[in-house]
Length: 392
Image (cartoon, rainbow, N blue to C red):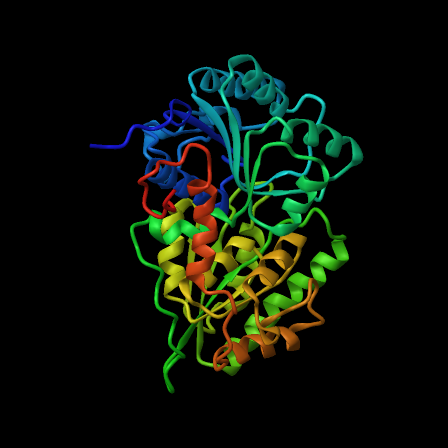
């Protein structure tokens, strides 16, 4: 007998920064699909997302035609499609990511809040970060919506502090990033740590680069891109290293294909180069990450995947959320790079050191996963006898 879920948890509509061809956000969907069924007894989670490789077709409710452009007809279709999904839902859940940074006067979050108030259906947010707000107006609007959300699980302490200062009246849990549950959602244990590459053998470096940084000036972006690509090129000339290029975002405007192609061209003929992209799916990216020996990442969830896979990595902290992650896991100082590396020599040195370094992040991966689980087991809709649920 399956335990009977709360009426609110039967058919949640899960919303987020979905449909943007991003592995990190798609991983949130994979985890949400598994975790809401496992911990809340959800029968039919529905995602406000277009079809994706890693989810059953019946779980996604957005028509991909609305993602073609920002034209008025496509925007109207996008809003009406979400409104229809909302009308058939039992609750609304913001599922992961940095979705509470900006909000315009006509934001869909206002629609969600109004619908929740009128219908009596609860709202929740799990695995999210709050801020930093992009403007004072956005902060005012977002705080108004946040105060109407019944349960919020945040992935970092800074977000919890923002909500406490705002007088958030609901249930607040300092939890963790949803991706911490990805191995379990894919039916796997957390892998053993990667052994050091054997003497005489070839190591594999996994790389995620960032195609667009909206918070950096163009010269800074170019300097960083040049340093990372040349740093990797010098590494493969110096050490027996092959490379897997992970294109974590394949969006034609916001994605990483241009810079990833540039890295591939710089390595042409120097080593074996594999490419795996968001189009291959979350599981394919996870499986390839487990085959790497070291990692160089700009995409936050490239680093999260490497950490969970037990792969030594360095993360270029282009946003505060990257610094927050490194602080949370206790990343060794020897494995750190600055927001804009000084040059390729620094990049090559840090990567070469990863091949032999013994230091690992202080936070056990099992604890990282458990914090992610709190997003679900400490929610009001958690089943009493769900796995991982504390005895009451």
